[in-house]
Amino acid sequence: MPEYPALELPDDPKLGQNIIHFARALRKAGLPIGTGRVIDAIRAVEAAGFGEKRDFYWTLHACFVNRPEHRVVFAQIFRLYWRDPRYLEHMMAMMLPAIRGVQEDHPAQAGEKRAAEALLDGANRDMPDTGAPGDDETQIEIDASLTMSSEERLRSLDFEQMSTDEVAQAKRMLARLSLPVKPIPSRRGQPSLRGRKIDWRRTLRASMRQGGEMHDIARLTPRPRWPNLVVLCDISGSMSQYSRIILHFLHAVSNAKGAGWARVHAFTFGTRLTNITRHLKQRDVDAALAAAGAQAQDWEGGTRIGACLHEFNRDWSRRVMGQGAVVLLITDGLDRDDPDALAREMQRLHLSSRRLIWLNPLLRWDGFAPKARGIAAMLPHVDSFRAGHSVASLQELAEVISRPDDVGEKARLMASLSSQ
Image (cartoon, rainbow, N blue to C red; front, top):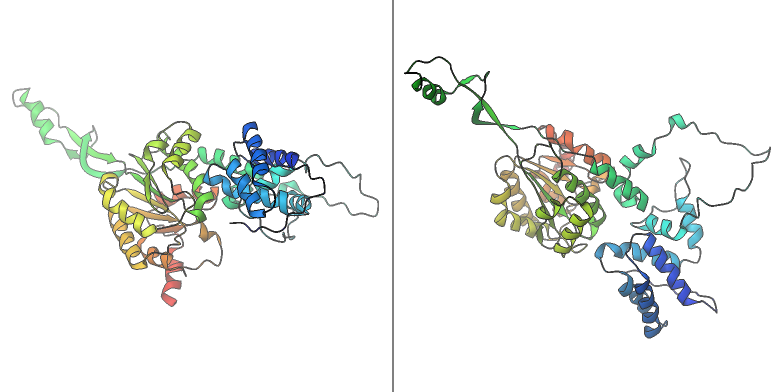
């Protein structure tokens, strides 16, 4: 719940017009707000009064927010618009490009850049020119050949720090990605002219049609078998921004042609486990994620990783794992349940899969250490431990899946665990 400092409004605040402007900012930030909701918000404020800060916040919240993922953006825009006396200067400083070596006073919080863009409405692009620099001023020339392209910068940018436009660009980049996988050799064979193994049954059947004379020898080659991909995605409060973008990536993988996967099964978990496989089969990504969000009722809630993995191992493991399934576990590992029970469920999941790959957004920090009990309990039972916070980290998944010997950061973190 956000803090509520005193609201300082002028003597003639024109509160109705301010609420209209506030609603426009929310709409530009992605909230589906129409004229009817704005009228309802003005009437609700008239009925509830403007005496208590908390009542004013939750009155507007009840009128404008109807989905869990909109809470963060609403809170940031409310803070910047209603409570910060110098919100415009703060946003302009945050939106203007920074010179390398000069850092911001504080990193942008989740949803803060989207809130800033919505309130500015392109003000930073429409600023008047202040004139050419004087003779005594130093002009700085930047060699564009040495700068990183916008797409390359976007590849390495953290999902949590992206603006609205950057999130849209990242989703378009993820829609073009795929996870090709190599087939698994099996003992079953298929007819082949150059196979090394002789198909005695087909050879003898052909000879019986010719009076027992054997003219040709039928041969077999191993039939390729494609594994299943099983994805377990954390949608708790600490993972909400990452999970939404990763689900766009999973939708692209589920509908990719020629990727090689037999089937792609997707599950979300927070306080409970939800199977969203059938929703990701829809062609339209917005409709697919809307249906998945409607079924998963624990968005931005708590985290019970051990209980959810127990439910998966008990009810779904034999149905979707098959032989040689690759499992992607996407979570930060912050769990408050019993670490011993979590370790048992992770061990069972590991034994049931061909490979278990853990994507953790917390690994983006250079000084990351497995100090949390949940992370320490899960780490020994994964094959590869990788970061999952940017487009580049998801692009590396194709190489990780094709290399069975890849362990990522597991070896380093296991060494730090043993030294504790």
